[in-house]
Image (tube, rainbow, N blue to C red; front, side, top):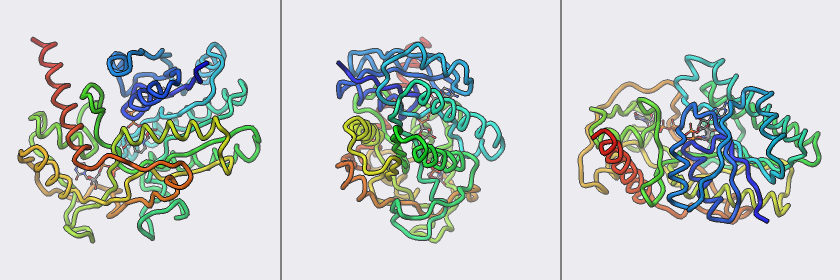
Length: 347
Ligand code: NAD
Ligand code: UDP
């Protein structure tokens, strides 16, 4: 019988790519999502790639009663991958309570239900933001976590502390926290990709939307950082590589290969690129100029973040396979396909 994986936030950007990877590896996927930052149509996109339309349970996981119901009426769950969260850093600075409320209530409600219904395998979507402004680069999992600059980031750090505590008290529970660096790119098919609500906060969707003509000018937030060209350096990772890492992490839990009840892994490529390097690479891949201007620094941005991924390599047997050109080309293919679909629907 297929192993059944509950994927919270599975209609979102990373969750939907992970749903595809899970289905392709013969898992059954059950999605829980309140669609606060996604759309049901993603299920058709998953079906067009895999031939299977996963079941969606539309639920706000902040609601403990409804969350409990989902677990009560959907039995035989082998593992939970918890993506559901709000993720806009700047909004979290303006509305911290919204972020603590959503991200922590949803997490706690899921964990309480898992304990009640005896589900013992949990994967958590964490972030490189838990390292704050790191003292040492590249960042290994041994780097101390620091108070992140944003309430959003702090929800990730607090969540990891919660997981550490409960895996000590609940001997049956195993948890893996995956610390993503900067996910970009889209599925090769061009049918699935990132679809931010409103104006994008992240660099890659802002670039593709500028290139496609929806945004006028990309603002480069600061060129006076202590880096090679003055713009911040990040470790960009292809979303499909990230999705594949989740499949491996689930298998590690199901096969009881864990060395500790709570494990953390960096998921990046180990390569750091500056904002200007990303723009240049985009222009080269597309043979098209991106309209940009230098703007003030964005509050909370750190100069450099890039990973040491050797732990994921040795313990999970995972390395990122896709290069920057592929990340850019797939993001662009998705942007163009999506806009074409929208135009067809409007005409
Ligand atoms: P996303 O917004 O595309 O997906 C999150 C999904 O969770 C959405 O479909 C949303 O509707 C759902 N959701 C939010 N709150 C919910 C709730 N209370 N109940 C039910 N569903 C809810 O975001 P993403 O980029 O796919 O990120 C997935 C996870 O990865 C998040 O936890 C995010 O914090 C984390 N992460 C993302 C990045 C990134 O750059 N994208 C980096 C590091 C970590
Ligand atoms: N960035 C930018 N303009 C934008 C969006 C982002 O210059 O419109 C920069 C941002 O300052 C950071 C990098 O691009 O240095 C990556 O930002 P993103 O928001 O994608 O991810 P983060 O690293 O903040 O999680």
